[in-house]
Length: 505
Image (cartoon, rainbow, N blue to C red; front, side):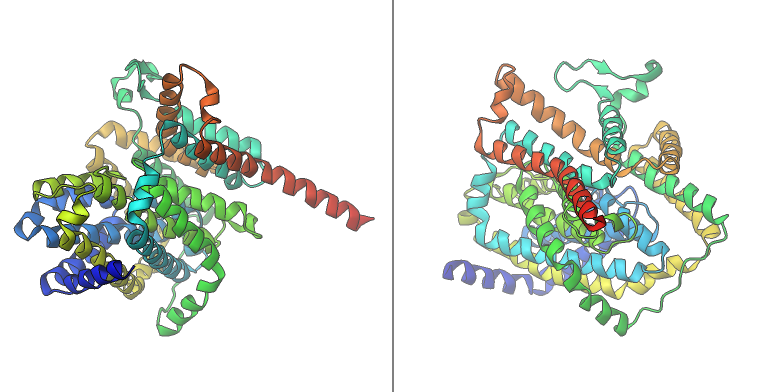
C-alpha cells in the first residue's frame, strides 16, 4: 500500500508539471464542448485531435486525450438537459429526467447534479483504479460470452422499471428496439436480414446516433411545439453562489444512487467492449427500480440525472483499466487511445506498469486533477448553458432542428440517415402520444447487438446447450439477479394491493 501511495504521489507531481497541467486544462475544456455537440462525443473528439498530440511527449499526449475523454463524459449531459438531444449514446439516459427538469425551470439543479455526480463517479472510479487495477483486470478476463450475455440480460431486466406500471407496453417497446437492432447483416452468416424494400442503405443497419437524435431531438421538439403552440418561454434562472450551495446541499439526496452508479459503472467499464452506455442505462434502471419515488422518474427526478452521469464517468475510467493492464480496449474511445499508445512506442499490457511506471502513474495522477478541473469548469459554465433556455422555444426549435440535421449528416455522411432521423422523430412523437415508453426501445438498440453476439457465441461454443449459462458461477448469479429484478414490480404490486385491502378493512 505504501508503494502505491508513493507512486501515486509521484504521478500527481508529474501531472502538475506545466506542460501536463496545460494539457489537462485544454483537454477538459475541449472535451466539455465536444461532448455537448450532438453527433460528436468522445470517440470522434479523440480521433480528430489524435494527430495534434504527436507534437508533445507521449505522457503529455495521453494526459490530454484522457482529459478530453473525461470532459466529453461531463459535456454529454449539457445538450441532454438543455436541448433534449443526447450529445452521445452515453448521455441518453440523462435525457429522461434532465430534460423535464429543464422544462420545469430546474435546469440549474439538473446541471449541478450532473456535474457533482460526474465528479463523485470519477473520483470513486479513480480510487478503485488506483488500488485494485491488477485483480480487477484478472477478474474481467473471466468474463466470456456466457457472462457477457448474463450481464446484458441483467441490463434488460432493469428496463422493466423504465416502463412504469405498464409492463406489456415496456416489453413491446423492447421488442421493437431489438428488431431495429437486427437490421443489417447477420453477425455469423453474413446474410442480409430485414432489408426493407431491398434498399441497400439498410444493409449498414440503423446507426444508434440517428435513432437517439431522431427520437429525443426531433420527437421532443414536435411534442413541445404541439403542447405549447411554439410560444413557450423557458424559465430564466439567476445562477449564483447561493444556487451552488443549494445544489451542494442536495447532494445528500442522491448520494446513494450516485455511489451505486459509480461502482456499477466502473465494474461494467472494465469489461472489454462494454463501455459507458450500458453502464449508464443499467444505473438509471436500477435507481428507478429501487427508488421509493419511482413514479417520478422520467418526470424530473434529480436522481435520474445523477445515477447515469455517475455511471458513465466511472465507466470511462474503468474502460482504461483493461487497456493499460491487458492491452484490450474497454470502449471505442480507449481503442483509439490504444492505437495512439502503440504509435508512441508504448506497449499496453501487464508489463506496462513495470516498464513505464512514470507514464502509467503520471496518467493516473492526471485523472485526479482532470476530474477536479472538469467539475470546476462545468459549474462555472452553468450560467452560459442556462442562457440557452432563456430564449423563446419558437426560436430554439429551429436551432434544435439544425443541430440534429447537421449532427447526423456530419457523423454518417449519408443523406439517407438524415431522412431516417426525421422519420424516427415522427415515430418517437407518436409513441409518446400513445403513451408507449420510448426509453426501453432506445436502450434495446444499444444492447441488442452485444446481446446477440454473446448469445450466439455461447451457444456455438456449447453446441447449442442452453445450460452453459447456468453452469458458470458468474453467469448464474447475474441471471438470478435479473429474475429477481423482473419479479420485483409484480411482487411489490401484490404487496401494495394487500396493504390497501387491509387498510380498507
